[in-house]
Length: 198
Image 1 (cartoon, helix red, strand yellow):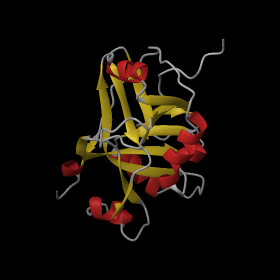
Image 2 (cartoon, helix red, strand yellow):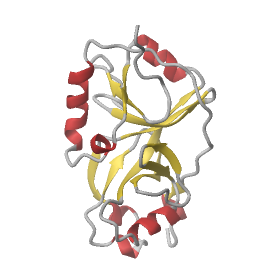
Image 3 (tube, rainbow, N blue to C red):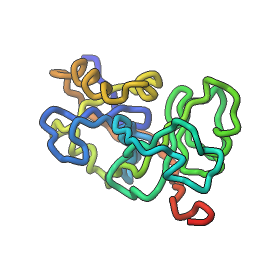
């Protein structure tokens, strides 16, 4: 019998209809790291109306831009993490899947602001989601999450509020189990308080 997707970086966790935890209700989480020590991801379908330039007022290059901050998860909401889509690996990033990279580096953000390539895309997240060893596997086994191979077009959708609805329609009735596999790197974050002048 053909197996479904396995737990690992580059997987969307799609909250089941029965998952009522308000932190993850109707959420879609992109896993950016997964190994025997635990898992880390960002909720990708909860944009706010807060411009990134207001969240990081000392980064003058952000002023007047349309980028908004997404709620990335319940952990460390005072830290900013980034998901980027780029033709070649930006500095200080972790490859997640295809042409998508993860970073918590202010240097990476500044590199993005200096890019002239229209294909270079970025989303910024306040906080992230984290699980201890075996915790996420238990939630998957319990049926809290559907696993879906991530794709960049969905991740960077111009209508993020549709992501959960569209994915839950394609996954309803199709349950999969997750497996432990693959090492990950320890990831650094940029604290909002680390921005000069804050």
